[in-house]
Image (cartoon, rainbow over all chains, first blue to last red; front, side, top):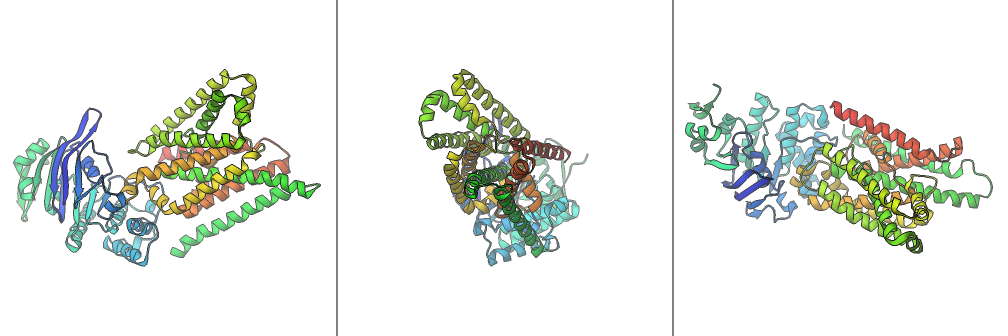
Length: 252
Length: 321
């Protein structure tokens, strides 16, 4: 369970996240949705101690993220941000091996190497393992980063817009992989998503933000509703039941 | 694929080591006339100085580029050596050359180095240990810091008595000919201690090179690691600046070449490669200029020229991408 209590982030006078409290349940996929500038990425960064909070506290599985040693948190929670350019030139396998750093401290054991191979296979990167990252397409690179994060073998995995750069096919397979990870290993995956239909289709829990505050939090049935979405996005959105799922139409 | 990837850096390192040893050998023996005892002792001191400077500049540049997570900034570009000179000038102004001259050379240097580690630790930690800043802002900040430190030093120098100024000025021009031999011992000690301190850090440096968010996600205490590395850089810059004066672009040149030659980011390979390259350039260059062409002062000029061109190429290539 991730517990955010009165979390606040300010830049000068601008309050980006404003005393936000939310509980993200353990297990399954939780999506964070909301319009641009609602504070989604900022919130995710604060949950993962990448960004200093100006107020409030966050606990992940009972550990306070700012008070607990960083290497302890690293075995509990992993985060992948949106833009990951590396100045270093690495192969896919090198990158994924870094996911074992919290355990190996840079000297991977046989067990660590087995983890790496499993993560590579899990993301279907076996054939690309020895390629350099700068030789890959955006989607392949994204998968390599996700493989690294899964290789870190944490209960909680936080991903900031993991579907960016992915075409429909790869977006679908990324979401299926993540859902599989929650079912196979009992992981808790928290995502920032822009496409509310992906959020609706795959999530177990949805957190909606608006203007740095919590607009709604609950199951898909509770949040993906016409009245809720109208408030959150400030536009008319129809919600239809399609194939037993709630699909939002917002194209016109 | 795998054996190939490890074999290449190893072969490159072996080749560089051979070249470096060759350069040192040539420096010691080429064109030697007369008493070998004297020649070897005289040149040995100079060689030791060159190797120390090469080592300090290469190591400090790689460390700095790793914590700042880019390949264009170097300690010199961010005004580290200008800061060193400012501290030195301040000492002379506050104490007067008479006192500074009376103090043991080594203790003045030690005082300088400690002040340098403290100041740069504070100043650059503020820039680099927090949340990310854009490269442009950093380059600008570096230029402004550099100019600010330099103007502050020159203001103080103008207030000095001309005689005191003469003494001080001597140390402000990069010269690989006039290595301050009295400082060899302390510099060697500092560089050795810093290097010994860096070895256990190598795997963590690899992680730091991934950038702040990933380093934190992988469990590094980012602020602490960055501060430690910056203090190490400050000590190394102090040692090399005290020995030969400020050198701006040389570090950038060897670090970029090391990256290009090794083609992989492991610091356990990268740092030795950069150090060896640095030794080859300094010792080899000095040998060629001194023994073959008979020039005496030009090495720093040539090295800065080539390094400056490398800097421009890097900037332009970044701009294209």
